[in-house]
Length: 200
Image 1 (cartoon, rainbow, N blue to C red):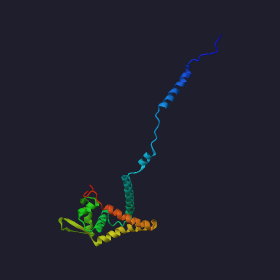
Image 2: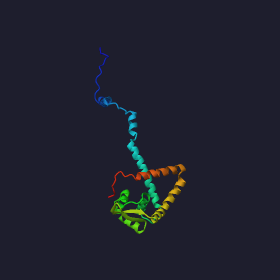
Image 3: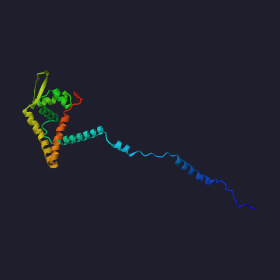
Image 4: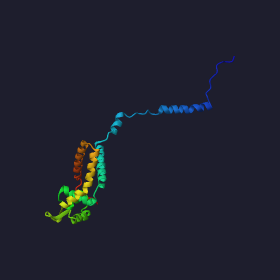
């Protein structure tokens, strides 16, 4: 009698080749390490700027604002004085009589670079140069009344432009805040972190 039970034979050939890649892929998925998500606080802490970064951002904003205003205001000028002459007259007008070396140090330039500027200002009677009692090799530079008048006339177009802009563009509170900021920036400009350092 023929038995109805038939033994199953192993699958060979194409069907075995088809299943083999599937088993490999499944094994790879099992062995792949689970991804560990970073806790939220790590990213948040990394995105918080440090105090140094905040100071640098503030410094950059102040520098850009001061530079932009100075560049724009410089266009509004009479043109009777050079930029160096205006800078020297403005300095001795605010600070009083100074030696050429003191002027150069405060302007962060070499004394030699101011030789022609000081000579031209003296020729035009905008400054007086007298011997320094403490050091006869030095002279003291002081602004004259003629120099003050020339400086005021040179700066008047700039002041008029700024006055018109802040009147039309800023509120009264903003104008008061800007005046306070200008005094603070002037204070900063007078701080010398590296005394005696001049331009090459």
